[in-house]
Image 1 (cartoon, helix red, strand yellow):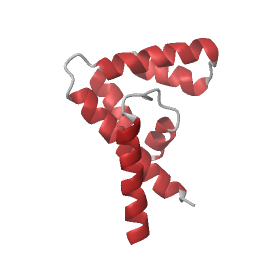
Image 2: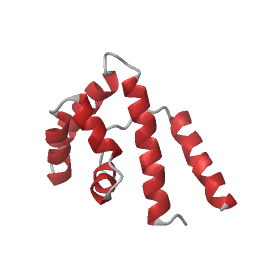
Image 3: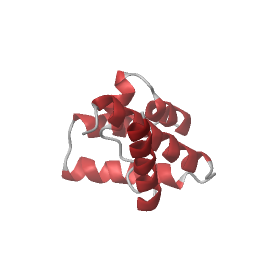
Image 4: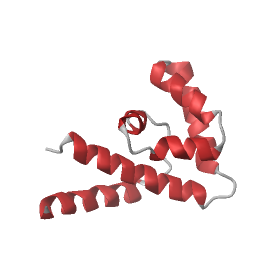
Length: 107
């Protein structure tokens, strides 16, 4: 079973991969997709976490990026409900999972 610390490290690695994809895209399509997902969540399942992400996503990419990459408890909390699903392909996501599994087994 994964510890909370391992899950948080993996979540940050996923966020870094998402940021790299969005950084490389001048059109910021991943950011647009996250905004659409968040708006849909607000309609179907509104809640404090969704509202918080909606406020964050209303800012510029640099502020959103900083929120995703925070390495403190606040960043961990935000990543638990982030609307950036679908930015990584399933293959990319599973490769990161496998990498973390290999690292935890080697430790």
